[in-house]
Amino acid sequence: MLPSGVFLLLILGSVVDTNTSSEKGSLLYPYGPDQGDQTNPKHDDGTSERIALFTPFTFYGKTHETLFVNNNGVISFDEPVREYTPDPFPLVDGRSFVAPYWADVDNVLGGDIFYRQTTNAVLLGDISRDIKQYFPETLFTATWAFVATWDHVAYYGSTSTKGNTFQAVLTTDSKTFFIILNYWDIQWTTGAASDGDAETGLGGIAAHAGFNSGDETNFYNIPGSQTDAIINITATSNVNVPGRWAFRVDNFQLTGVDSPKVNEDSDCWL
Image 1 (cartoon, rainbow, N blue to C red):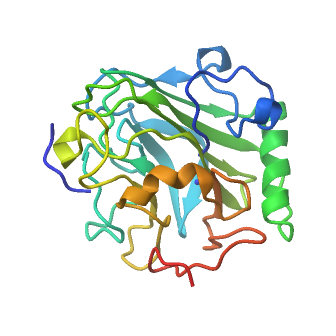
Image 2 (image 1 turned 90 degrees about the vertical axis):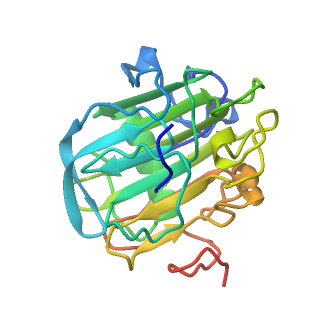
């Protein structure tokens, strides 16, 4: 293990074989080898190689051309994130990243991490439909998406068969930029090296969800982050779809339609 230091889409216990995000009640967009996904190495605190983006992605006013999919539930720009115990946002070290579910994943013990860039017309149509529903005042037709899925991943030190399934999607039409985070099945919050219980995967310093711009001012903590309540993230939402959070991230629109109001600089409901 390394010393602790520091939108996507859904969670599911098995690979989705549907063609849309709504079939069979699943919020997950299709993923897995059949979709042409790449797979992260089986390595505790591992990460993907540096991924060159087909389409640059603007995040909090800064345009990025590369990213990393990190095993510990983070998509990071510029550099990988190997830390397994989450730190609260804002981070003081200036790193920019999205944290669908930042915790101590160990895919050696179980699960897989998949990712791909895509311009598939069917998938982009589904994503566009969802974004238009959540942000009806924004004209948007997706031309690119990046889909990363953590499929039934285990936690470090686990003596159980518990696994978490969640997904993050970055998407754009080259003018506006969105992130969708979806949570399908969350069974644990903490690895043993973060003071979690090896049998239950609970307790200790629990997982963190949200994003950090890197400027120490703009960040977002999904309510319940780093508390026991994060286990219930499959029942929460800012777009009235349990288990789904959606954000426009180029101009700091943090919520969609019919959303609870939140304080951008805290994890508290207003």
